[in-house]
Amino acid sequence: MRPWQSYKLRLQRHRWRVRAWRKRRELRTIANRTKAIAPSDVLVFSTLRNERRRLPHFLKYYREMGVDHFLIVDNGSTDGSGDYLSNQPDVSLWHTEASYKRSRFGVDWLNRLAYRYGHGHWCLTVDPDEYFLFPFCDTRPIQALTDWLDASSIKSFSAMLLDMYPKGPIDAQPFEEGMDPLEIAHWFDAGNYTISKNKRFGNLWIQGGARARVFFPDQPAKSPALNKVPLVKWNRRYAYVSSTHMLLPRGLNLVYDEWGGEKASGVLLHTKFLDTFHEKATEELDRKQHYSASVEYKAYAEQMAANPDMWCKWSEKYINWRQLEILGLMSKGNWA
Image 1 (cartoon, one colour):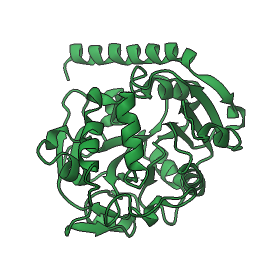
Image 2 (spheres, rainbow, N blue to C red):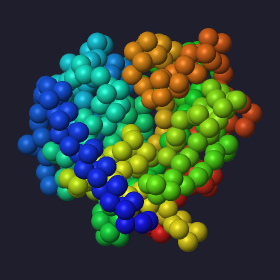
Image 3 (cartoon, one colour):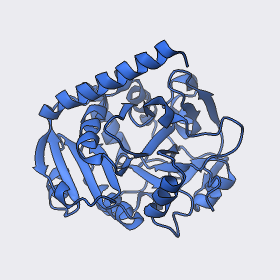
Image 4 (cartoon, rainbow, N blue to C red):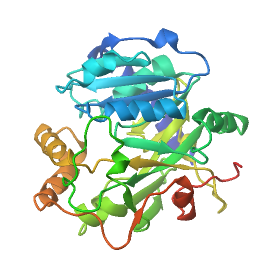
């Protein structure tokens, strides 16, 4: 990269950090338990709205993985999500009624919290419908992964977003509070993915899978990005640029091997497609708070009228992380 291009990216990173500092005024503290965070703790950061049914299992899943503390922004929930979270002993909670869109879809809020509380910690940034998988996660806690990354001088860890869905109409099986969503949505597309390189930020850009197949069949280039860098050894100099798709400094996005080998990577099991989806999609389309004039939610609304079955004869039933590695969707790299 040319010196002037690097300089422009440094300016942009500074701008995002300043913007996040200004957005601190939009966050009202509900429960700040960050004094309990120990120097070696692994932290989860998340922004949510009306996810009450998902929260018990979401917290349980990441607690069992070894996460020590959750830092969450509640963006105007009306379903009791805030009350539930405020009573959790390992959750620090902030509330805002401000625009999700004008916070760059929550990125500014989480950049601010990561700056204030995440420095020096491994920070995992996920949505409440995302479940992080890493190599050996069935037998090792997340601290085993972060210890290996520290020993290898690796500061970021990528994960491909993998859309999970049920067999049959999306609303056929009720999702109750406390349920594991993978009990319902346990199918995925093993192929149908495209990968390109973002020359400016250096990250891979992945699209395709079930959402492209079902909701964007005629315009796959408009389907959502599936590449993420959710796990980062945070430093106050860092800033996410677009969700967790990419961040600055640019080197944090280089999570693949330029010489054709494999670097360790994970998967985020994305459990959006449950019977709650139609209501959620309708609400978000009305709010108009999502990317690119909510084009994604417009596509959802058009297809949901037919109550589609996302399952097809090429669908794979999820078993475990080793299955995903065999399929080439994640890798243990040289971590044994």
